[in-house]
Image (tube, rainbow, N blue to C red; front, side, top):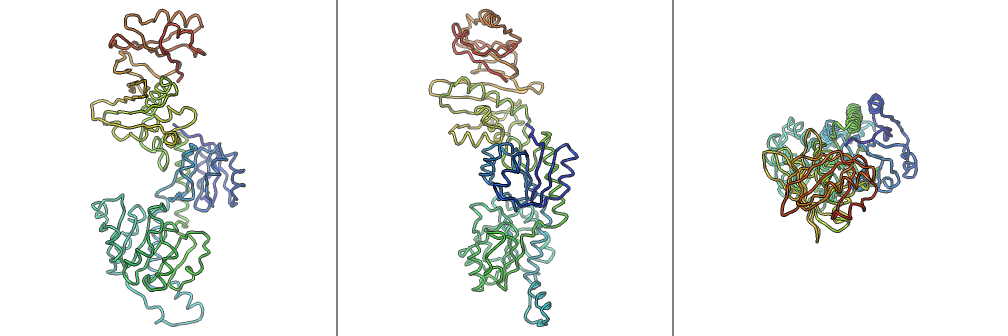
Length: 517
């Protein structure tokens, strides 16, 4: 699947390199410095199928609902909390970020704030500029030998660790997605949060803002920290609870805070930012010429790759695209589920996708998305299908078995019907290889118009079917007949054209289905 990307709106001072790369690859791009209200942005986006933002513009569910032409949202940076990803997914809109684009800039800024806190640099600078010279007022602390706790050991957290280790700091950290062995490779001692708080001289957070991290540092966790602990937040406002932080500063539990991000931006929490032990910046973590140029280039290059269908790096809400899933295998499962939906005739049913072979071992999620897409039809795409299916109560379970060759088996079960289909990829094409454990000796390609029916093995009805089709001007072009089992067999027949209505076949066939691929 490739994404339709023909015209992109670039907002929030995205680097001009993005426009140059997009236009060089045949994608129209408009670089706009204007800050839009939500209604104005909705109006502007009507003529675009792609938009790129940084952190200033919020892409809400209301905006997504009102912009049906939008196919992709790019975040020139890492965090996507200013984008309603759930709503984007529901509407079939891909959300893409540049996870490594501003890593160095954000890490260096974090280290700058740590150093500033240790030596009171901003306050000393303002002191001298005011014509004063009181050296004793700005007695600092060495970083050598101090313990730096890093909460979030992703790209930025690890870069911070490596830089601060050069100052002689001991680095400890926590990340539920990183193992102790992996952390150890970077000289970071992994430990649970409750063990981190009492040991840390400095704490820096590098996590997304999600329910589990909102208010991560609060009155309770500050109460477990060393007296005078210093904290830094260059990630997302709200990870450190601002009210709790101010109380900790006033009580002396917290000896200083370096804040680059806030719950509300621009912040109105002047009691916090004007505190003498706070170093505050207006969200500058990614604000370097190099970082912005890198993010601009990367998001544009990723858009081009997604448009061409060659690579989907950076897409965060589409497992069928972001995983390394061959298109042909996604087509197989989508076609199988299309057949099952046709046979179930609107009744409630559950699906089980069984895969085998090492080639398919890690493709459960993308293949499940393709199954959902086949069930929902034109109502959904590979991005939106899983979430819509979940809302509708469509259950798809996944099983995988080791085996020498790759194969997909999709089983649909309702109260009255069970249908099991085998699918494979042959010569790069999706094919049907079996029905209800009855093998088709000739694999049948999912292409064009297909008639599928079950008949008694003693009377397969092929002559009658051919004559009836011919009377309607429809010619069979290919055919595959399954092995017989328990007195019955299956016939798959490719037709020269789609025949509107097949009631004339139902006079001598039980439950025939006509499909168009």
